[in-house]
Length: 86
Image (cartoon, rainbow, N blue to C red; front, side, top):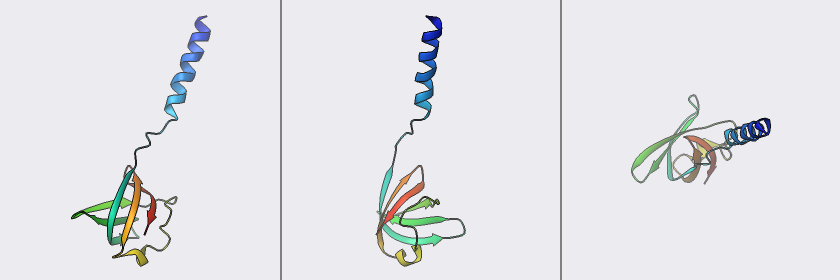
């Protein structure tokens, strides 16, 4: 009985460690700068400058220079860009 409860507790704890928090932020504004060296994008959102980090899995980040000065929507998780639409 103890072994069964121990095994169930182990699976319960292990399954929660694989769950991500799922927190995403959506920023809508104009692209003010792109730093290819640091792999960051800066967006002007409601008068504030917001900097997000690009990753290899960021979608829509193929031609960022063309987006400079244009209005975009950036979805990010913990400051890392998931997608850019604009």
